Amino acid sequence: NQIQQETGFAVGNMPFRYLGVPLASKKLTVSQCQALIEKMLARLKHWSTRLLSYVGRVQLLKSVIFSIANYWMQIFPSPKKVISHINSICSSFMWTGKESLTRKAPVAWDHICNPLSAGGLNMISLLEWNKATIGKLLWNVCEKKDRLWINWIHAYYIKKSYPTTFCPGIQCSWILKAMFKHRDDLLQSDAWKGFQNTGKYVTRKIYHMLRGDKPKVTWRKIFYGNLVRLRAKFVLWMTWLDKLPTKDRLHRFGVVTDSKCVFCGLIETCDHLFFECATTKKVWADILRWISIMRIPGG
Image (cartoon, rainbow, N blue to C red):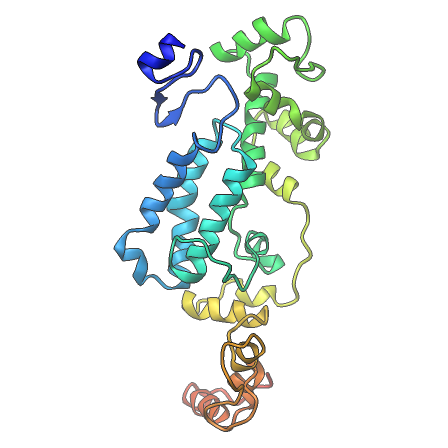
């Protein structure tokens, strides 16, 4: 108590960081991960992000934001509450351009994390990715005994046992328990057996195994090798999912008072907006004639 009063920290706590991450003898708390969240928010709050389109926000989340979270996740198992909070922030930023949490999400974040073949945007799901990165630590314990920290784990915890049969006890650290939590599922997977043949752990293969097989959509091929502008491709993706904010959808949710097309007065659906409206048909006909394609768009 006297030490805590003089320093502000309890005995056993480590009030410092190493290479930007907190050192903790116990399981990370949400408050300890607040620095990670604040670092991500600092990138999202920059004035230039306000000018990004949907596609620009997706690219920012895939590159900068994921790299920040991935640095922590290669070292620690992140609390599920923290991962859920990060997902909410990313989802809000993608759809609104703001970091403040909102429920305005036309497409669920888990679906956005699906591959393109399954109708997603191939965003990384941090929950499964964190499990895959912790699996790499288990791989090192099982296969790479030439490192100091691995030798220490074998000498102090595993001792005369084997990593494949070792059961962490109460005295084991929280990180060691997390490493062995999904051991049986990993060892029995085809991906792990393949790693043993090649001698190399591939995090992305374990990640795809944890995500599981997703049903492929029939319209996936239209996105492969498509040289259209990314912004137009994003609109096409929203259209295929029937999530484009056309007037019929907005009227159904009470956002607008009527669902009539501004050109012809009929109900504005996706098919009507792009193909069935007389004005749209004329635009399509003029463009196709201009690029010398004799075809009538069907829908």
